[in-house]
Length: 63
Image (cartoon, rainbow, N blue to C red; front, side, top):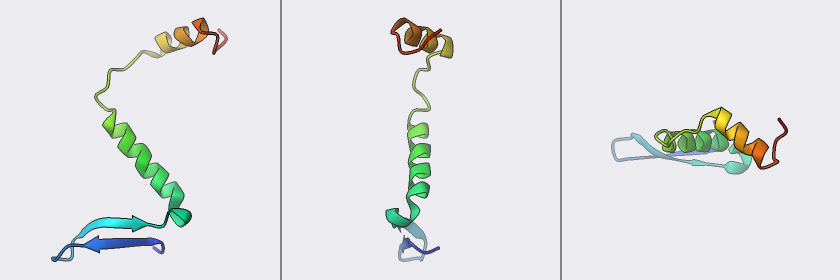
């Protein structure tokens, strides 16, 4: 795949990648989304009904 270079260790194992963001922006955005999702995995969740009620109450959503 063009636009991606791999950095390897002394045993030839891939340890990092350099990605041409002009060419592969969509791949990077997907990767970033996965990392963000995983980092928030253990955060407290708010039920949709509460979020919706709060948005309606604040005038940001019509009920």
